[in-house]
Amino acid sequence: MSKSLQAIRGMNDILPAQTPTWRYLESTFAQLLDSYGYSEIRLPILEFTDLFARGIGEGTDVVDKEMYTFLDRNEESLTLRPEGTAGCVRAVLEHGLTGGGQVQKLWYTGPMFRYEKPQKGRYRQFHQIGVEVFNQPGPDIDAELIVLTARLWKLLGMADAVTLQLNSLGSSEARARYRDALVAYLQQRFEQLDEDSQRRLTTNPLRILDSKNAQTQALLADAPTLHDYLDEESRAHFEGLKARLDAVGIVYEINPKLVRGLDYYGRTVFEWVTDKLGAQGTVCAGGRYDGLVSQFGGKPTPGVGFAMGVERLVLLLETLMLVPEELNPAPHAYICAFGEAAELAALALAERLRDALPGLRLLVNAGGGSFKSQFKKADKSGARFALILGEDELAGRVVGCKPLRDDSEQQSIAWDALPERLAACLEQV
View (cartoon, rainbow, N blue to C red):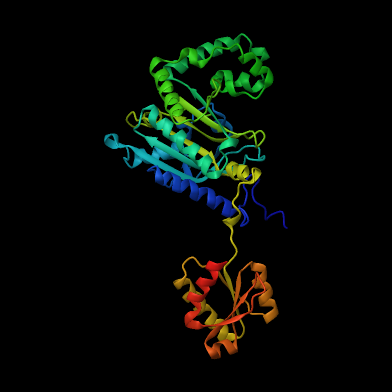
């Protein structure tokens, strides 16, 4: 293949062998969200760069290192969305969806873009399913989102492969107090920090908490913890969340170092993680962002949500061998037609059968070919029956029906009786 005809590094084609798994995952999630009363919203993949700089936060890796940003012909700075929450908040504000305290329970899916080093489970174009809820401030909706995701894992058969981690980041004032204490602690140990953590100490010190550097993690063992600085309201909110999860039997771990990589989070943060995918262990993450709407110029509006990576979930399904076998079923029947008149009749027959049997999976031979070659195609397709049209069949207004998966004899079935007979045959298989 010519080197000029290659996908961009980290941006992958999803081939027909995989799309049934994607559709299965997406449809399972869509049906689940519908049962919980969530509505789909569709958002553009391009936004003004300032939206992400203001929302995600200057100094974050996403804004500083990972965004695909360019100037359009009007010299306006645009960015391919690196995540979905900021764009959803923009849409909610632009269209007045939360005016008068209206509750909005929204979900979306689509591609996101980040300039990262491609590796298994991490790509430059990746797909997310996201959920956002507005104007519900209590821990009850936080719990609902977690319960909803727990139900998804059960539906997919992977409940035993994922673990829930929880933390509370408290109010912005509590985080500011904690940030000062953490910076003071780490400043005294600055030379012992890894280079990335030294940089973050002045830009986004809370992100040091989830450093992958072993020496930095050892230093953090005796560092102040965020829970020591939580305000009473946030503490009560967190206790309310835990009580609700306990009530429905959802097991969780408290991870005091869980901070998330986006600046807009406060109070509840959570992640579902797995040890089945190596380093890329987070399959779903989210939290509360009560200050984000007002940060964009709207009225103070409670918000909470989560996102999950579709590629990682597909990879986890495949790793755990949980992809249902029937996702890409073979056709029920394959129509073989011999001669121009039969080819015309085959097309009409196919449409008549599709009208009569809406769930029928039917292939019609295209491109002509000998009797042998068409039967070879029919067999290779995996179809259960070959439906045969030739001069003799047309003259007798019948269709030959040859079972392909057993040694049963071929039958001639009257044209008018075929839908009923075919339906009966399929029920017996």
